Structure formats: structure tokens, C-alpha cells
Amino acid sequence: MKVLLRRGRIDPVVTPTPSPSPAFEHDEITEEELNSEVELLHDEDILRQVVLESGLAEKTWISAFSGQSLEERIEKAVRRLADKLDVQPIRKSRLITVSYSSSDAGRSAAVLRSLARAYLAKHAASIRPSGQQAFFEQQVNESRITLQEAQEDLIAFTRKKRVVSAGLERDLALQKLSDAEALEQGVESSIAEVAERVRILEVNLRDLPQRRVVEIKNADNPQLQEKLKSKLLELELQRTALMTKFQPSYRLVQEIDEQIAQAKAAIEAEELKPLRDETTQDDPEFEWAHSEHLKNDVELQALRRKQAAGRGQVNAYRAAAEKLEENAVAQQDLEQQVKAAEDKYLLYSNKREEARIGDALDQNGVLNVAIAQQPHLPALPAWSFLAATCFSLVGACGFSTAIVFVADYFDPSFRTPEEVVEFLGSPVLASLPEVHETDHNSEAS
Image 1 (spheres, rainbow, N blue to C red):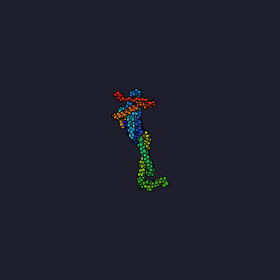
Image 2: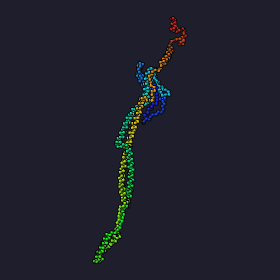
Image 3: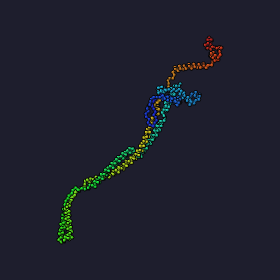
Image 4: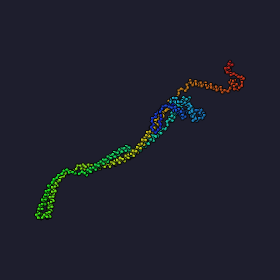
């Protein structure tokens, strides 16, 4: 069997962040890696599993006679398997050859197949940590529950505060507050301007006449003069009548004289001061100033009412913006919790998928090691019949020769006179030659 080491894939490192696509730093297989795989193929756990699967520890008549237990038979079978198993890395390659020989070809193939399965399982268990998918599955379930709770808290907050997006509503409220403050400043400027116009118009109204003379006519009053002259004539006739009867010093005459003097004075005054007819009309400047004053006064009152309403609106917008700021901070905190829970859920989901794919690849044999040549049942023995015969003949000859020499070496009898002399140290007086069967046959004939 041949094992191929390759850079099929790199197991991703378990980190709290999404794993990037692994990149190969180098494609070479080091000597340390080859030796590590060789030692892994000699692992006692692997060999023990192979012994149990292949039936190498079956009970025989020798083990039954010696009374060996199952554990002892397994341990001896593991030792025999380790002695017969030959694992060698091929120089300047990525291959490892694994060979096992026995008298049964089917058992040899079965042993190597079992070794391949146990080796791949051991390699997967040692290289890739176990339990990742179960761990990430648990974390996915927990993060899903956390995400649902965070989303429910966010929905409950929006319903309780009656806000959909507190940050957006806060920005809109701040925009409206800025517009209201700008409008209030414009109203204040308008109020100051209108108030100044009202003050100037009030000063002008005090200086301007309400009406002005447009035409003056001077003429005598003939009716009055006629009445005065008639009265004067009547008074003079009365004085004449009195003078016929009384002296000028008489009281009635003096009274008539005074009335006559008054009448003459009135006639003279009337002649000096003729009748004056003046035509007047409303002053247009006064009327304009008065109408402008009324108009600006009305406008000033309206602007003051608008200013009061604007101040109330500004205060309302400011209070709403402050409240929305608090809601925005709370909602942002809840959204961050939802985002963190969502990122955690997606991270563990990706990790679970990576673990699932890794387990699936391990199950399908997509490992960094692969069986390049599967063990199979050989059709021919390791030695051909001619080679086995020649080797057996040579072995038998050598073995028999060795036995002869050993038997001769350990034979205690003396075969020659020289051996007697050498061993006993005394001379040989007589010796009989060895009688062969051919000699007996000749003598008999």
C-alpha cells in the first residue's frame, strides 16, 4: 500500500472572526511531516484496532494450551503485526510505502485495508479537533435566542416611545428648531423695524396738522352793516326825541348816547374787519401718516403675537429634540445590541457551516493524506514457484550440510587413530579398517 501526502486543504483556525480563505505558504512536504506520518502508521492504537478487525488475535491451540487471555493474545498479535509491518518513506517524494506479508494473501490485503481505515480515522482525529460542529450549533442556537430578545426589546421600545427612527426624527426636530429660531430672529428684527416706524410716525403726527386751509375769501357783511346802521338811525331818532324834552345830562339821553357810540364803533369795526371765508380739507400727509401709523401698529401687534407663538413653538421643538435625543441614544444602544447579536449569529452560522463542510470533507476522505495505492489481493505469491524451489533447494542443502557438521562436531566417538592419540595421549597399538558394504558383497561373491 502507498500513502500520498499532499496539500489538499488547510483546516481553518477557530477564531472569533470570519475565517479568510487559507493560502498555501509552501507546497513542499518536509521530512518531519513524512516521519510523523510514518510514526502514526506504527501507532499502537491503530495496530490494536487492525488486530481486532482482522482477527489476528484469534484463539489457537497453542494459546489455548498455554492458557493465554484475550488481552495477552491481542498484545502479542500487535507486536507481531508491528514486526511484520514495514513502513518506509520514499526518498525525494511524498509517498510512504506500507507492506505486510503473511502466508495468507487475503489476510494480508485485509490487514492493510483495515490499517488504511484506522490510519485515516486517526489522522482526521489528530489533525482536526472534534466537536466543532456541535459547539457551533449550540452557539448558533444561543445567539439566535439573544438576537430575538434584542429585536423584541427594540420593537417594544419603538412601540412604547412611538418612534420609528429616533435619530431621524431628532434630526428633523433639530432642523425645525433651527428654522423656528431663524424665523423668531426674523420676527424680532421685523418688530424692531416696525416699532421704529411707529415711533417716527407718532412724532410726525404730532408735528403735522390734521387739516389745512385751501381757500380764503374776505367780504363785507351787508346785512350786519344794514342792521347796525338801522339801529344807529333808530338811536339817533330816539335821542332827537329826548332832546326836545330833556337836557343832555339826563340819564336816558346819556344812555342813548352810549348806545349810539357803541353802534358807530360796531359799524367802524365791521368795516375794518371784513367777513372771512376759509375753505379747509384733510391734510394728505397727516392722513398718510395716520393710516401708516394704524397699519404699522396693527402689524406690530401681529408680529408680537407671532413672536409669542414662535417662542412657544421653539420651546416645543427644543423639548421634543431633547426627548428625541434621549430616545435616539437608547434606540441606538438597542440597535447596536441587535447588530452585535446579528454579527455574532452570522459568525457562528459561518463557523458552523465551516465545521460541517470540514466534517463532510473528512468523511469523504478529502484529507491532506490519501491512499495512493489501495491494498489488493495479490494474484501471484511474493516468490514464484521456480524461485521458491531454488531457494528451498539451496536452503535445504545448506541446512543439511550444517546439520551434518553439527552432528559430526558433537559426536563423542573416535573415528581415527590420530584422534585417540590426540585425546588420550597414548600410542595406538592396532586399528581395524572400516568395513564397507561393498566389501562384504565382494567377499560373499
